[in-house]
Amino acid sequence: MSKILFAAAEAAPFYKTGGLGDVSLALPRALAAAGETVRVVIPYYEQQFPDKYRGQLADDTHFTVYVGGQAKYCGIKTLTVAGIQYYFIDNRDYFNREGLYGYWDDGERFAFFQMAICEMMERVAYIPDVLHLNDWHTAFIPVLLQEKYYWVEAYQSIKTLLTIHNMQFQGNYDPVILDSLFQMGWQKFIDGSIEFDGQVNFLKAGIVFANAVNTVSPTYAKEIQTPAFGERLDGVLRDYSWKLSGIMNGIDTELYDPATDSALTANYTAADVTPKMLDKRALQQAVGLPTAEVPVLAVVSRLTHQKGMDVLLDSLDDFLQHNDAQIVVLGTGEPVLEDAFKIFQAAYPTKVAAQIKFDVQLAQQIYAGADIFMMPSAFEPSGLSQMMAMHYGTLPLVHAVGGLKDTVIPYDKNTGAGTGFAFDDYQPAVLRKMMTLATTVYQDDQVAWQQLQQQAMAIDFGWEKSAAKYQACYEDLLDTGVQF
Image (cartoon, rainbow, N blue to C red; front, side, top):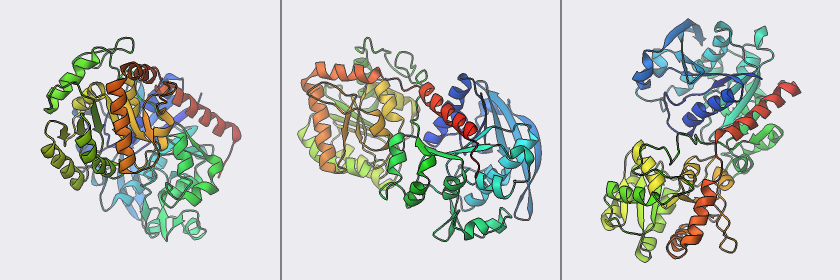
């Protein structure tokens, strides 16, 4: 078994802004359960740190990290939760803020974070076999290990795996950071290894210098090698396709379990989904819709163009005029999209409930109480919600991209096969047609619907399978002896 250090910018249960936070919680736990030695390193965002864990923090050590020519304090706090030891990189100037990201100095903040990780490993006497990096916030570490910390003998055998959760975010900065932050030479910029459009690109650097690269679904690994999904790095990814793979994310099937979920009005299992109707009634009441026996289509999402909310909005008016159904939307996002859903709620008060907020309990109630769960994303590296919905017997309706394509089997009316509904042509008219098909099957053929529910609930989306694939990746890295 291997020693793994899992490095990320966020991790539940401490902080989470998206899927990275979920993965950073679940994957290390699944790896540990499979016998790996796993520790996690993340920033100490003091203002966001949960009070319930604050008293458990212990100061491990502290040292100086030089950012450019300036000496910066770096504290290492630690605690153990669910058998996983966490290291927290502490610097109040960089991480004691109201939010996690979106600041003018994010480049400097995460340059410090990455150098701090490199400095930390020897000081806490934990030298991993594999350093598992995640997204641009940690993607420059393979360059640092080769160009800045090459002299540390203990680091010579470390292998690096970079997981890309979303190609949109790359970490592009003026090359002056090579001097002003990292205090390293420009050779790798001059030869093009870390340069893109005249800037240092952290994600490209990771793709080039990490020993292996993966994304969070097999289909997304293929998609990002094309101009449509590669966010202009598709050529780089094609050049390094030999070390690129896709491993599907999982979900916590114990946490997201309709049989035990305390947020539900009624619990149920695949063997008897009848109580699900009580959850549907409770959901309708909670969002102010009539408790009518009509199909409920739901969205739990960031309200953004990337999530396909513009395409959904463009399909809604015609759909609502010609179908007896209800729409429940939960989430926040782009103001223009939030306002558009509110307008639909005002226009169709008995058919549309726009819950423009973040509400974990209501999200659980939607997974259980809705009939159809919509994810018309323009792109979706992995997606977790469609798997959660299926686990609750709520059939997903998705744009067949990325992890959505990998996890949702389209309904086949001839054979009854499938676990949901999927469309390829990214147009409002096509989405509307698929929404109509799903509601028609629900209304006209309950036998087929219940068969789809059973098939969806039978799929194992647990992290164990994903963890086994990561283990195989680690073993391959350590067996091949590849170095860059």
